[in-house]
Length: 158
Image (tube, rainbow, N blue to C red):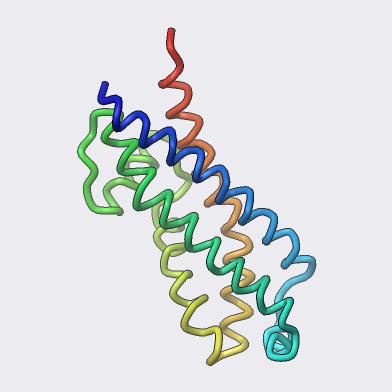
C-alpha cells in the first residue's frame, strides 16, 4: 500500500468531515423555512441573511468538489482502480451500492452553476435552486460519509 496515498486519503477524510460540519451548520441556520422569490428579493436589504446564503452556496459547492474531484479519485486509486471520467466513477459507486443515483449526483453538480449564476438575475429560479440544494445536502453528506466509512473500515489494521 502506498503510504503517501493512504496519508492523503486520511487527510481528505478529515477535511470532508469538517466541510460536512460547516455545511450542515449553515444549512440548519438558513433553511428554517423554504425560500421564496420574496425571501430572495429581501436578501438585498439583509446582509446577515445574504452572507448565510453565500456561505451555503460556497460550502455546498466545496463539499461537492472535494468529494467528487479529490476524495473519490484518491479512494478509487487506493482500492486499486484507475479513476476515469466523473460519470464512470459515479456509476462504479452506484454499482457498489455506495451512491444512490448517478444522475442525481450529476444534476446536483449542475445545480451549483444555477446557484451562482441565477443569484442576481432571477429570484424565482434562485429560490428554487436554493430549496433544491437544501434537499440535496442529504445526498452529499450521506455519500461523503459512506466513502469515509469505506476507507476507514479498510484502513483499520488487523
